[in-house]
Length: 363
Image 1 (cartoon, rainbow, N blue to C red):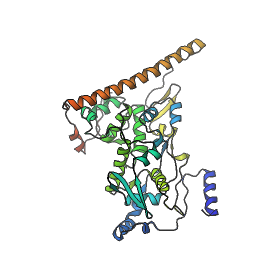
Image 2 (cartoon, rainbow, N blue to C red):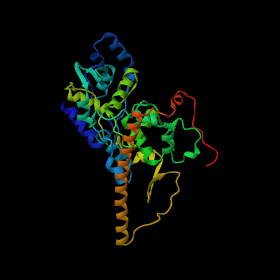
Image 3 (cartoon, one colour):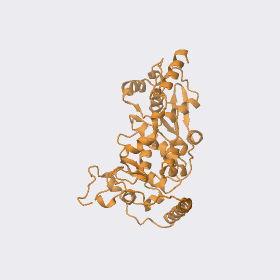
Image 4 (spheres, rainbow, N blue to C red):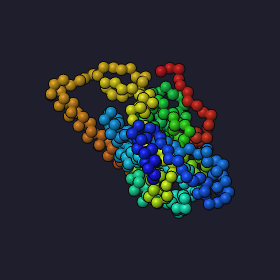
């Protein structure tokens, strides 16, 4: 890196700019070997957009009294949602353009270097393991016994106010479920035009996170990448992760344009206000909830001791609940294997595109 480039990087970091760029020396068109594919890439390259990276401040939300971040930790997503790093936008575009699947493994070729993202790469860079259940799929055994409308209704703050539970909007969800779904659409399965709507897959994923179902997250995210590449999607996710993989494969990064990950990429308190929450002395609540005074504030040492004991008891109860959920999931899995599914599929609802959310006239 030249001295001027180094000065540019240090100056931008000191002033806290959101994005800084290096001037590149080569056209990415030259990285495509096939003449026809090179022409296509050159024509449509400006339409591609690498999704701005977002990462989660787990400790901040824990200090603010939330629970959803612990759900993410429990299912093994902590390292992934906390990932930071630089993004080489042009190289990410080439990676997706050349993406193919060989033996179930994502492969590509960037600047003459063969790239392979196997289970070892996923584990090393994201902490995700290729083991668990395909809990994001409708055909998964446990999901055969799960009604997605029922899941969504249970997550709503006021389920009786709605007559139709589709489309599945984030607005109206309980606080913890809403923040979990927000992280899903902005960090885990990003790359969509509408982030305020949940798909059927999203509902199953949120359900798996909340109920602690071991999930093959490598498959979830690999399928997401493959779907975007195969459909020639113009919104490309996981730029920081892919850039880290390119570094690992020793792709020449000299002169490449860099998008740095800064504090502005962090999902913090601003995301809470974005999701219609406000902070009161009793914690974070929805904006439409009237503030009420705290029913009890410990004043004496004895009162503080009692409150602390109740908190400890609540923590132990929470752990027991998690254990019961795991046992329940195991039993459901066993029943699904020995008993034909008795539930009626509601997949036909997914074909209704014009159905809209209705609000009843009575509260």
